Length: 486
Image 1: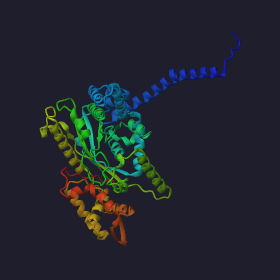
Image 2 (image 1 turned 180 degrees about the horizontal axis):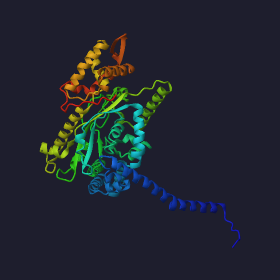
Image 3 (image 1 turned 135 degrees about the horizontal axis):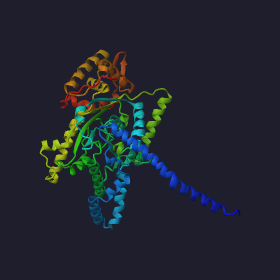
Image 4 (image 1 turned 180 degrees about the vertical axis):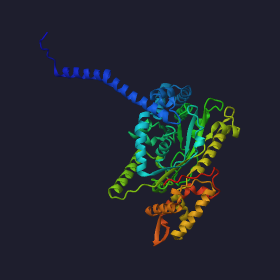
């Protein structure tokens, strides 16, 4: 019994490894999963007591289950069968593509990451760069969005790559939002982080009908599952600051399976964003005739991020760092799709293809008009318009202040939401002028006089463009007044 048994070193190592693997598989991993599951359940319970729209069960479903539902969806299977016939290959070969597309599109929402780590990081990250402001929100209208019964869709203008985080942060007390991200963001670890935040990935220029069908079915599944979504109808960053022609793909997918007599409604909320400084402004101007950043390759995007980070670090180290001013949002009045269809006399069930697309286009145009009316007017916007109208003329401070007063009245007469810090026009003009001077958009040809830098006219126009529609006919929404916070 007490005899010594000798074994080779390799066998002893193998036995130790097998014992360690068994310990991990049967005790450590189950315990870790139980611990994490409890933490996540507590987060979900806490979040549902604070959110105005509860987390829908769809967002809490395991990712592999959602992928399987897409892969074996009858309409996807039908599209795979047609693709196999067109390509002249067995259907199991096409199914490999189906699985790849489904894995690429479907997100893996993580409630703990979104509400504990993601929101905290986004809040501190955004506040490092901007002073965030919510200028106007139709609270009475938003309160009518029924939790668990309506699907909330935020329709947002696309001015900067910061748009995603800003809207998510400002809406974090109401709902957890899901977005469509471009395929350029698939690189690790950024793609994994976006998936954990509920984003799904879209190949915007893909002409593969099989891929489009899988994407369509996912959007319809998420919409029917009451997942709150953020949609950028322009599909890309605006190169000149103006609202671009809408791309109706995502909206078309949502409407195609919508039943006005069904058990849920889709509620669209226009969200207008404006910045006192768009981080990408010079890059957008330099490439107005080229493909946008969001449509470039991953390497190009990484180089852009690296250059941006190096520039920020250099300013911090040299003591020249200043925030990029205010980033401001307006949440407009909700639009019930059910009520809109009734007003337009659009019967989705009986429409032919052409009538259906005309209906979708009309809805898109209406939403874009509401979106234009929701864009806030910031101090930089006011000063930019003043100097654009002045042309080559130099202006004194009193003249700028007088023109600003008249311009604010003109904006308010067009029912625009004008953000004036503390209600002080003088302060708004001073801050807007300071930012223009710092960017070298405006110069001082002589003490007390200011004029546009001729080399920066394109940059000046970029900050006039988002609000110029208020000065040529005006918005149609109700008059909105911004709060008096700084």
